[in-house]
Length: 211
Image (cartoon, rainbow, N blue to C red):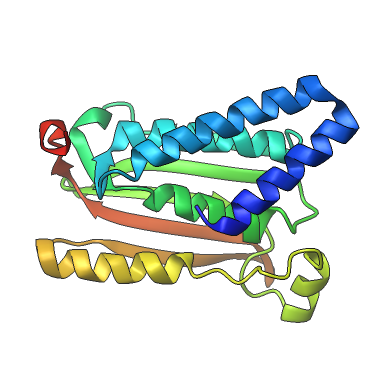
């Protein structure tokens, strides 16, 4: 979770306190505290169970809903027969992609903001995680992008680059496929959002080894 997110979150707390009063500010602060505790817990290890990652994502998105004044429409599509607590994934990869989608895709958009989190098995031994948004996308002209987020001077993101490099290391170490693919969504030549496809090997999660 990048420092700029924390800076904005605390600024929002101040705004809520002045505009909506102490009661709403307290609700926001409680959500923020829960998110921070969960973040500290998650980052203790390099891997986690898919269930724990999903629970963390829901805490994070619950907080983002408050920040966005409930303007986010979030859809979870998780394959029913997945053994969530038995599958191991790299920690905070999914959350990082979601944060990137919200910050750089959805927040600058004037559309009704939609986010899809889809998880399913593929080819028997692979896990597919899809993060799809209907934001401004990556092909928007920089001048237009700057106008949309003129209040945010630190918009450049290195999230996908860092994750791609992390996956390259895991591919060498574990000799299995870790992959990150970004698809620009378009309709009639107009950017309609971004889809990120994360491909991971299905590995048994040994919780005892993390204690």
